[in-house]
Image (cartoon, rainbow, N blue to C red):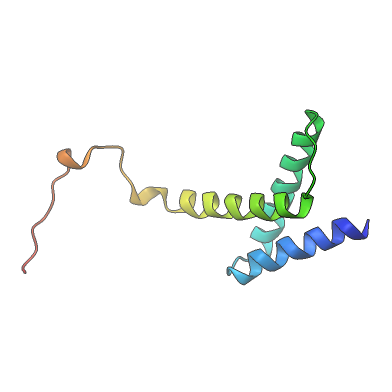
Length: 88
């Protein structure tokens, strides 16, 4: 069990170092653990669970950040956008 506590501590440290809020950290850690367990249930073997969990939680955090700012993007080619020319 101490191994799992070490993994949780490592994930929490990585996320808090990157400025994540406590609630967000808990959600991301839970998602990473669920993904690892699902992966193992399909017969996969994980030799370095800490590395897998840390990388998974980092990617989940990046995806979460991207999704938070999805309103900044449009689904149109740049050629179809009206661009405003600024003074140079």
